[in-house]
Amino acid sequence: MLKVATVNVNGVRAAYRRGMAPWLERTDPELLLLQEVRATDEVLRDHLGGDWQLVHAEPVTEGSKGRAGVAVASRRPIKAERTDIGPERFTGCGRWVEADVVLDDGSTLTAVSTYVFTGEFETPPRQEEKYAFLDAITVRLTELRADGRHVLMCGDLNIAHREVDLKAWKANRKKSGFLPEERAWLDRLFEAGWVDLGRRFGGDGPGPYSWWSWRGKAFDNDAGWRIDYQIASPELAAAATGCTVDRAPTYAERWSDHAPVVATYEI
Image (cartoon, rainbow, N blue to C red; front, side):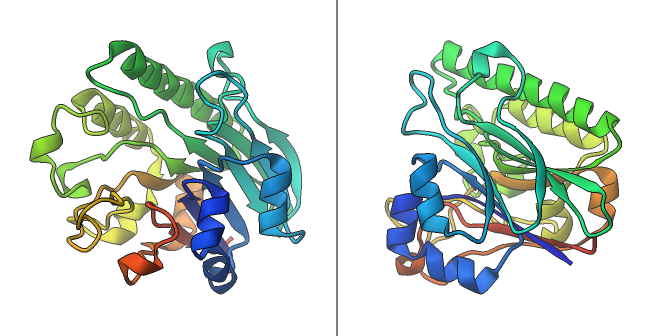
């Protein structure tokens, strides 16, 4: 069995101060995909410890430093890694990383950790940047799937797919994260055969949500968004046996504003 966990840590140093280490020990995934690392490679390695093979895309572009960073940590061998999605405009943005992980039968699983731009409806250049990144994801996933390998894209996509994926959907219909164009991009992805494991195993909804604001009573009232995903190629999805959002029992026990999404695969 392969256990995979993905989480936006909202800064790995802060996450460890708040209690990420006990969660990681208890959950014990073989693959750990992180977003918003916000730390150097050395700092990330120091926090995770030496038991992991690590691929980390640090942000180096103006505007991304200190606000992004994605990583794949694996207890299984990694035979290749890639830290750019393709278009030059996104080189060094720290929002896409691929690791080719060797499975028990010798086959390859390409694990992707991604952190999609938040976007901003009222600021067209920022929203267009998000759409361009989504288009680049479509191209890259098509390339990976054409190779016939297992592919798993995990991360914070900053999009709630349907009304059941955020509590206050009526108030957010004109907000980035729930715009018709963003949701249609996910529609096309799933129509092409990619599988949203969180929804497959999470039932019809509402929820389960994966992000709640730190402010107010959002967490206590479960006023959240489901924006964190494990999206699998069809063959890999067929091997999935479960996928859950590991929501903290109480506000005080949270170590990020996101909850991990944890899935298991018989592979």
